[in-house]
Structures are given as structure tokens and as C-alpha cells.
Length: 272
Image (cartoon, rainbow, N blue to C red):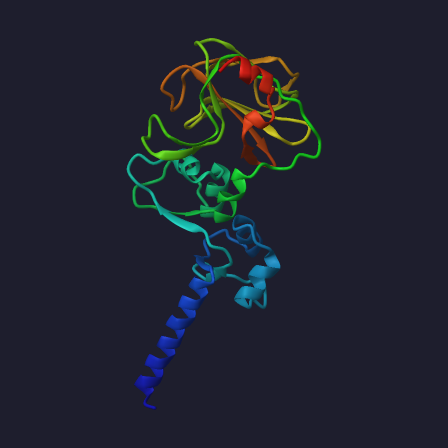
């Protein structure tokens, strides 16, 4: 066999192996400045040893910029379109914004550009639709009283005009309605958040979280300890919203779940 034929044959073998790897669900990642194997493993939610074994790395402390690594998984790729934001993309694929930021090593979440290619964490897409297990019960009260204008689940988004997964429930109430803490806990976030507008997040004793979005005014700050029933905000129409209401979420094990599985059903029956 001539030298040229050997080169062509070797190239063909490489192509075949690449196809097999891609078919088996591997993705390729180029090491960036500041990366370490442990950080990459955390970003892609894989074990460090799995990463070492798959890439046949002899010294885990010696990786270099632009080194190509194989990552196990079948993450989807998404190309940013006009009008996209990280919040919109996260809602579209029903994944956490924090996971998008971590997986794609994004340093400025408010600055994404048209044509930018993002990896979507596929290991969350299905899991987030499942009701997560809670070992220590928390009894949630309704944060406001009003009609449900949009339920948990897939819907045609009133602003984006796309079919997007709705991660909570919308409760229609007038401007300035007091918003109550659904359960006692510690305020984890109280500020403006893209899409949610003025948002409060409370973490509870079982590590679950409740989200209160689109508020007019926030009355608590990060780190505050709040009792169940404390007024934490006044409802409004901030963020991506078409009218005054409260967007309410319950997240368990960092996965959103249908709030109506946990709130008092008697109230719902009386307010349909």
C-alpha cells in the first residue's frame, strides 16, 4: 500500500471512529482558559473518573487550552435566534438558566448573540417534567387569591407566540395585591430577573424553593428569614407579562413541579 493510500485509509478510520462516537452520544469539547477536568466534569454533570477514562488521560492535572475532550451525553445543540434570551431558551427547553450558563461557560448571561451555538443539558429535559420526591413535607399556602389564568405545562406563550413549557401557574390579581410567603424560609433572591421581572425566591426547610414573579414592588431582601404568610411583595406586571398577575412556582430538588400538586385543592375548586 502506498504512503498516500495509507494516509487516506487512516483518515477514513478516523472519520468512522468519529461517527461511532457521535452515534453513541458523545460530544466534543475544546478546553478553554481557566478550565480544569473537575470543572468540566461538573459542568457536564459527569464523574471525573468517567472523563479521565473516556479520554485516556494519564495526568488529570495536565490539560491544555484547545485540547479536544470527549464528553459522554447527548446534549442538544441550539443556535440563538433573533429575540432570544437565556430565560426564553431555558423556558423553551424546560431547563434551568443556571445549567445553561454552567454548561456553556457563559460569563455575561445578558449578552448572547444571534448565531451563537448553545448546548442544552439533555439530562434535565425529561427529568424536569417528573414530580420530584420530597422527604420532609412542607405545607404551602396560596400566595394570593385569584383565578388561575395559565396552568403548569405546555402552552402557547402569549408574548413569544411559541409553544413553551410553563414552569408554574399564573394567578390573575389586581396591581398591588399583597403576595404572601407560601411557606416559612429564607429569601434566596429578591431583585429583577429577566423574564420574571421583579422576582422573589424563597428556600424552605426541605430545600424546596418557591418563586414569585412579575411583582410591582419587593418588600424583602436576600437573606431575610420569613414566616409563612408574611407579605413579601406587591403583585404587578413586570418582566415578560401581558397583564397584572403573579407567576408562582414550586421547585423541588431544583426541578419545577406542578404547584397544584401541593396547594390546597379545595381552594381551586371554589375558584374555577
